[in-house]
Image (cartoon, rainbow, N blue to C red; front, top):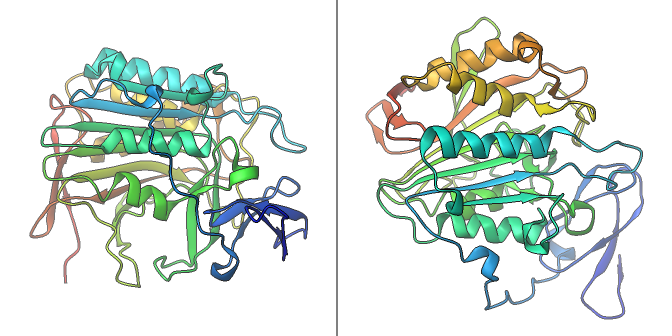
Length: 355
């Protein structure tokens, strides 16, 4: 390892291709621009983060209604060596915004959109802007708040180093500047938008990226198996670390592929919409009177098996996409009672296996 002359950066070697990577203070992982793999920065090699700025940019001092959303879409235009840009993410964000505003009554001024076609530097989906947007989403949350977090882009896996992952890997989302700043790990996402949720607050996250099945680190996972049966799993950290809410409800609806590589599989650059986002929106549109989680996941699965009903879907090349839901919320014996996105939708009762 070599230290830069200014003391604010260090260089390490990519674990997979040995390329030289520059690491800046505070980061725990870095993505290689040569091979797209993610390398974990060893604890002893990390540089303490700089003191966060006291001033919050006006772009993140927006209206704070009871319904708020952060929508992120990244095409990575010109960012990935040897790979084309994704066409779907910006369309995904626009479609999600229309759904929230028109169907569920979210005020447009209470939605932050971060996409890489923006001219405003505070509306680009950089790591720092995503961090500030997540903080804005949950800051001061209170009973009755309905929050939505949506991400469409690339995901990644990186070896876990703190014993809180049963499979030995952290999941992550890749911001626009992942090659310079590294991905955002599930540990940070959980700390930022899950643990602050107090009683009566509901967060729904829809993540359209590879390796996103547990990217919020929620303690319970429900898989839809190939034969159509539910499969519940307790994903509580082996280390005993607390990853739940502070009394609120958190739900992640995401997809995952069966790829075994240690970096993000490359979605189809020519697809116009993301498979997860498209199937989520279509499933809700087909249920004008409300939908349970079970019916939602079943409908999404059917839409994806039907190749999106004629739409050009973005998803991992050569790998089937499976629907998965993650839950963290107030439990009543062996039940979780949660509703989805808006008060007008019906309640789903999900049975959990108990000892």
